[in-house]
Image 1: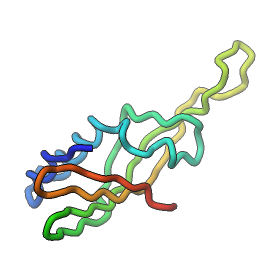
Image 2 (image 1 turned 90 degrees about the vertical axis):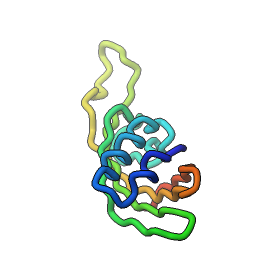
Image 3 (image 1 turned 45 degrees about the horizontal axis):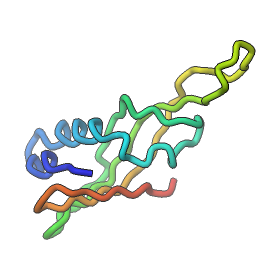
Image 4 (image 1 turned 60 degrees about the vertical axis):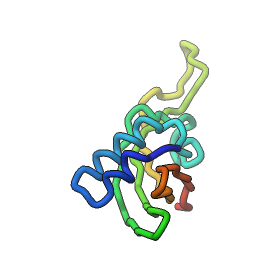
Length: 112
């Protein structure tokens, strides 16, 4: 995952919009499927990001973020399938370490 624009915006008012945009663009790379609690298929098309904590280290920015997203319960799509097709709200917390030099990021799903 690449979050170079977010690193460049660190300490400025546009940091959160840049982080939100970068994570939205790369949402398919986030471990949303592994964090499901209601549905069976994560929908990464629209995520919302909440910054919970940030720690500035010499070479890394360590962020703890909350991700709000949706899921669906995937069924067989048969006419008599009782599976609801409504989107269900989901939430998870991620630990993101961003290398300050090049914006390369590693993402880990936090237990919860």
